Length: 142
Image (cartoon, rainbow, N blue to C red):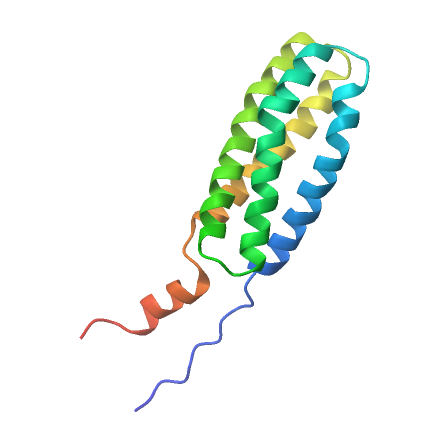
């Protein structure tokens, strides 16, 4: 007796890739403004922005392009971009919270949301693609 094919939920890969493309593009467009504004830690913002945030955003754009083009390397580049982004956000965010007392509560809430989002996306892109997971469970070994 033949089994009916299992219904699979729609893949979130394309919507997440589009959302990442828009978010990275907007952040890349806003980076010069964030670096050039006067305020606390202006030199640190310039150095971290150019040395760490810029490469993470460019990697994110490349990853989203690869994911939208359905290239296998898109997942790998997405993992690298999210790992770099999380490392920069954790280190920079903690330093910012310690050294800049202005609006510390709202800054902490925003940073926590960013960290959780990046961690969840890192976990999401670490999982095997839906096609691979489906074939691994649909064809049990004989």
